[in-house]
Structures are given as C-alpha cells and as structure tokens.
Image (tube, rainbow, N blue to C red):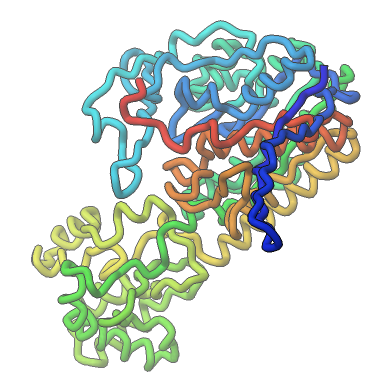
Length: 519
C-alpha cells in the first residue's frame, strides 16, 4: 500500500468585468503520493539504546514514567516497529513524581514544575508526595533502553556500575535499576541482547558535571580515557554485525542553564536594591581608589542608578592581590582589621561581564545573605549589622566559583568538547554508522530556533519549548525533535525513508511541560 496525503486546495472565485456572470470553481482535492516506508539496508528488528540521561528521557531534573515514555529511543522504537522492530522495554520508574528512595529514605528528589514565574519543586505546589521508586527493589531486565542518567563515557564499560553493593562510591542508582542489581557493565547488558541496531549518545556528562558546577567540582574527562572508552563501545557494539547511529556532544554553553541568568541582573528599579545604590557606591569608593592606585581600575565596583548592574564574582584566573590591597587600604586610613577583611574579600574579585556565564541555579542565591560568610564574620567579632551588609551574594560578597563559568573555564570545556566530538565523528565514519550532529542542532536552537511542522523551538527556558525546567534536558517536544534528527541520519546512511514517507513525528503532539497533577 502507498501512503496517501491529501491537501485541500481552496476554490478561487474570479469576477469578470466584461459581464455580470460569475464562474464558480468546485473544491478539489489533489493527492500527494508519498513513498511506502522502507528500512533501506537498516536491520531494525532488535534495537538497543545506550547513553546517559538524554537517552533515558530525563526531564525537569528527574526521571519518571511519562518522561521515559517520551524518550527519543522509545519514539524511535515505535517507528522501527513499522518495519519489523520488536518490543522495546524500559526500566520504568514507579510513578510520575520522580525521585527515588533507598530503604525508605529519599535519595533523589521529585521533578520540577512551572510555578508561574519559573521552575519550582513539585512539592511546593502540591504538597508532600510519597516517592514510590525504591532502589533496593529494581525491576527485572533485560531492557532495551540502557540510558543511565549521570553516566560518563567510561561508566558504560565499568563492571559493577549497576551493583547496589557498590553504591554510592562506585555505582549509579539509575544504573542499578537498568542492570537489575548485577555486576554486568552496561555494554555487556547491551551485547547480551545481540542487537541488530543500536543508538549511542554518550559523552555529555564528561564535560557537563564540570560545567554545571561552574568549574568548581568534578573534572573534565581526559582525552585518552574518552578515546579508549568510546572505541571500546563502538568496536564491541559492531563486533557482531550490528548497525547503529551515534550523536556527538553539544556545546553546553548554549543551553538555558547558562544563558538564562544575565551577568547584570541587579535592577535599579527593584525597591530592595535601587535605594541602596548610593550607599553601596560610597562604600566601594575607597576600595576602587585602592584598585586604581595598584593599576587595576578594571576591578572597580560601581552600580548604576539607571541601568542594570553586573554582579560581583570571584575570579580565580586573576591575580590575588589581597596582601598589596590591604597595605594600600591601610595607607588610605583604614585600620588593619578592616583593611585585611576587605582585602581578603575583594582580592580576587571583579564585576561580571557579558563573557561570563551565570548558572541557572545562581538565581536562587544572587542578592541573598551568604549565611556561611555572615557567621564567619560574626564569629570573628564583626557586628551582625556590618556582617549582614558585607555578606550579600553578588552585591557585597563575590559570587563563588560554583555559580559562574568564567571565560577560561569555557575555553577548557570547548577544547574538551571539540576533542571528544572529533573522536565520535571519526569513529562513526570508520564504522560506517549514522551520525547525528547534536552540537549543530543545539547551536541552531540557541541561534534563532528550529521550525518543525507548525512549531518553532528555541533554547529559551520555558518559552522556547525545547528545554525542560532544569535548563539542561529537553522537553518531550525537544526529545521528539531529536528523534526526527536520528531518523534523518539513519535515512542518510542506510537508505531508509522515514522523512520522505512522512514518518517523522509531529512535535506538536508532544507536551512542553508536565502538569503538577500528573502522578
């Protein structure tokens, strides 16, 4: 049977000036004949997917039934089924709350929801919930979706990564569910199913953990380790003749987690901030004079009374001038204790610029009291009122490294990403695998967006429809867009015709957010 698509053509009424007669044209239907769906040379009978949270269907900072059902591998499997693909099983969570318990104690939190102005925890809207996914009772596999949220490239080849006995030091709670609490590696679980076709999207977390911590925690995977892990994955997965599709690593600095909070969020029209600007500028005047004396006027701190101002950040890439700064401040008349306090606080700080990327999570701390520093000052004898004035995050106390990705850290991430992507591209080419340029896809989303059907998706948080409330993972609609890109790549390499036959999914059929009432 051929697929028939009907397009309704509007009737055109033409009036002739030579006479009063009107000629009516009947409504007609012209048929557009689409080719029959074919797999080309792809063998899609037994599909297995490997990867991290993006493969699992992670959304809104959690994994839950609805998000898993809308994962891109599950969507692909539904299309593969039209060509003889078999059942596709997933280690479904027990509810739509998200989160997980171990021995009844919660170890992972429920999902985020939209609170009217931005992302908020589910329980802040509907009240306490009972998370029903218990880690000590994992489901029984085997599973076709072997996506493990949090997994790095080398984790997929590590024995025991899914063993409860190794948790939490050397095991992942989601891997424990995928592996049904065995010592088998994720790769071994895949090979045990003798897949005819696989998808592999791994490597994001090899840079993401470092990036989302503002470069303050975790580490970038070294190139040699990534190369070994990736080559092991590809050579093993293809060793029995399986075909497949792989995707590269997006530039993480294009995602809403780094593009939502501006470097200059301090608004003078804000009644909690604006009236304090003259006092703040007067307070910083002596510090700015000391910077100028030391030949570093670029470190001056000035807040505008008419325009949005940048936050103050700690920048570990610039020289720490605390010792010389203290001496200059004392020379200007400050007592040694006060001069030392200010020098230590501002010896390695500056106001942010547009080149700095503030994390999405920084929005929860900017202009709030840094309680740790406040307590430290009070414990050192500083009066509470003065300590409170000196401990406002981003205003009088430099934002810690964890909240900001400075240019030097961005360069490190870019270098690692480019290296990993070169390995992925070369591996795909050498093995004859289909290749998805996820990096290019996310760059498009960040630069004008992508139109699919009747919808245009962008990387804007909430309004862009592509990214979920955690600012990192796609919405269900975003995952649908990704599924189409995977099918497009399969078409190119294996001669299938998912796109030409009209079998891409309609992204409009997938939600952009999940209701708090979804349980």
